[in-house]
Length: 293
View 1: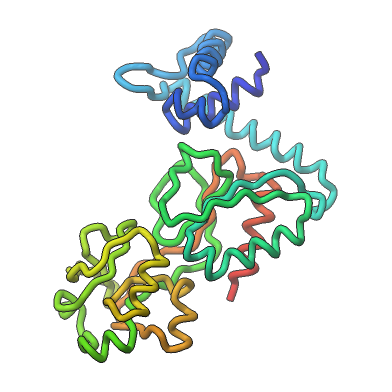
View 2: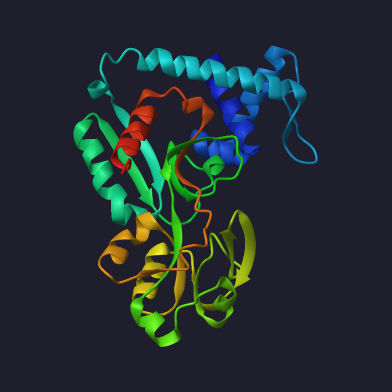
């Protein structure tokens, strides 16, 4: 058995803690993955995984995982170093990105990137659902908002200023709230990936407080939220990068601008094994330059 294949399979199992999910990602059967791990453990003379009650890494497994990440990263560096210039980059980059952000910014940016790097093929899925990178074959995911601690690298592309917004039509009909406590009397357009309980956390002078709002519409689609807000259905929480065009042309107005919302950042998430990938780093740098303003 090729040691590189064993090591790569081990890293995927370590990151997913699932034989079946690892088999899907590797593109083989569960029995093949299990056999690779058993062969690796026999060759090393240690147990890398506890199998009961559920799969988990042993102390030896954790130690070996750190070494594998470093070794695989070094291999990536060695391979990428063979390309004398970035224009010679080639291969596939599989990307997951939010649909609304794709419509407003990423479509043009990624098209420009592909034009500048003709030997790179982009495989892009745009969906507002939060992709579980442990269970997918994506090389990189673009996310907006606070990013939880994870085993993945989350490289900041730019800040993600976020506001309450509503249409002039809605505010004329329902009035403009002057304090967050008035939100409970207003119609809320709720993004379920962020606020499933119709509660918004607002900051004033560094202090955070939770405020309830009536639920007029709930969805995981930011495109639907934006359309509903422009139609005058209620107030929404939205990143500026999603709503900036509507704000500039007067379709939306910022509400309670002095109360801050933690929008986090726009980040590129990818596995630690890709930290030195020239393709990934070139793409992220391109995104940073494109969104600098």
